[in-house]
Amino acid sequence: MTDAPALSLVTPALNEADNLPVFYARASAAADATGLAWEWIVIDDHSHDRTFDVISELSRRDARVRGLRFARRSGSHIAIACGIDQARGDAAVVLAADLQDPPETLGALVARWRAGAEVVWAARSGRSSRSNGWLARGYYWMMRRPLGMTSMPEAGADFFLIDRKVIDTLRQFRETHVSLIALITWLGFRQEQIEYDKQPRLHGASGWPMSRKAKLVFDSLTGFSALPVTACWLVGLCMVAASLALALAGFAGVGVGVLAPPLVIVVAAVGVVGGIGLVMLGVIGEYVWRTLDETRRRPRYVIEATTAGVSDRIGIS
Image (cartoon, rainbow, N blue to C red):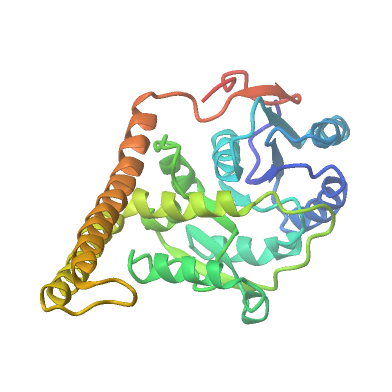
């Protein structure tokens, strides 16, 4: 294995066979322009195309390219965590393989790091943030306001640089159900940001369906806040108040729609009490499931294959 580089590029990849050669050409030119020795770690999240074959070919041509393939799909945040585990540089830059995050932004990130920043976010500019859906804007508002993570870029960030101190700190956290972006924000350190314009995807389709986005939201909430539990009793109080209002209407002899007063009382009691119970059980169940899953201490990822130069110690983690 060659001497440790100064800069580690970390890229999760899911069905990115067409994008990776273009990414390599652009990212290697941008990394060379920084004047730093670098490596590129690509984590194949169990793709169904030739992604790992492409990574292997690039690794044979350039020893600075190192690849790992998961035995099962684990998600981009776990793939990033795996790449950070493997990073040998004084700093690591995480960027996607689809070229929506332009590698040419690398120089600006490194410049801020050289000036003393320990976390540098590449924040989406006003132009690119307008293309975000209302769900994405709502998520980042939730993280910044109710959860108090004011260091998180307002328009979101998927592309960032972290210093070796942050890398070593992240390695101490072995949580499975967690938003890596939220965890880095929560850690502290000296955090700064630059702006960039998010680009259209070069090839293929996004690997982030709505189900994974919903899981990210809930992982962020349960991982860093008791807000869902608080919301349970708030919703419960509101539903109790609504049921009391309906009950009073029923006792006063006032019907609601086609319901006679006695039926109003029954519907209010059954519907509201049942709803409160289901909401509370659902939220508490999510916390219990996450606690159970963490206590099992199963590996966060399992490595199926690696290219040359990858540490032998990381079959599972």
